[in-house]
Length: 147
Ligand SMILES: [Zn+2]
Ligand SMILES: [Zn+2]
Ligand SMILES: [Zn+2]
Image (cartoon, rainbow, N blue to C red):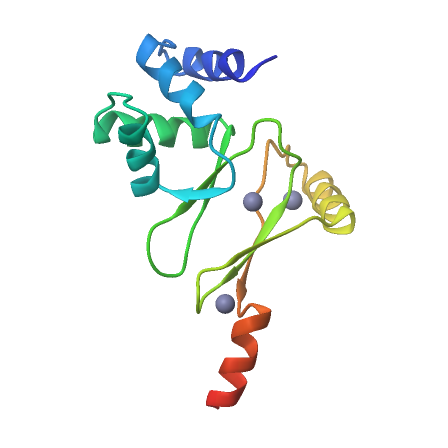
């Protein structure tokens, strides 16, 4: 199942259709690599000469997050960061509360434990986001020196 089909199915369960506008936004989004915020996304669309209103873009982005095609990373300060997960391996994030750096990590052990805990609670997991907040390796030293 490709991204458009997945999005289309999600929209259908919410009584919405994959309009040309939504499909256009999705296709453009799939070109973006790495983490980005909503302003950068709007700038990307303007640069590429893609006409999309801020409201439509942000609304569609929220739908894509809901559909699990895009991950939203809540930041301690500043705007939330987003990341397209289509064609990317699942991973979680460490977020530096000092400089905003995002460190990606993967742990089979954590993934396995999460599944086991859900099973024990009779909870069916459809997805998860694991975020660790703290100081990155660069900032940890600066924090220590300040103290
Ligand atoms: Zn995970
Ligand atoms: Zn940092
Ligand atoms: Zn990431």
